[in-house]
Length: 165
Image 1 (cartoon, rainbow, N blue to C red):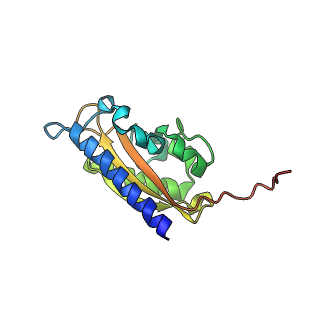
Image 2 (cartoon, rainbow, N blue to C red):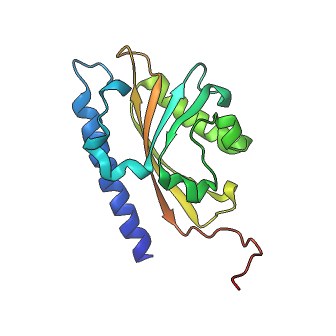
């Protein structure tokens, strides 16, 4: 349990770092844009950084595209998810969860944070502690969502049946 608490505290610190950076980009109440992001400013967080393009109704998983998923996502998802729409990444219940969460960010133009269990992926001992931050190319309408995700718990992949010689 101590390891999980340490992981959660590290995730909170990472979320705070990214939130402060995002907030520093806001000017006169306008949302920051993707073009303003300087990855060097949060280089140590890049493996857990994501960008989601919103190209229509955020309640439609075909309208949410994973523009970027850092290398830290691969072990939990078991494949590359960059470039895929949510309808191709998640089963229906998980897609609905993410659509609702991201629709909130789009609608309110405010950050959101949450905890999501990865049981849908066959990893019940692993949870995703996430942060989502709205970005806008025109300063008003959310068209990209910046995310940071921390995996908390145990990543126990299903046994493949392959044994070492």
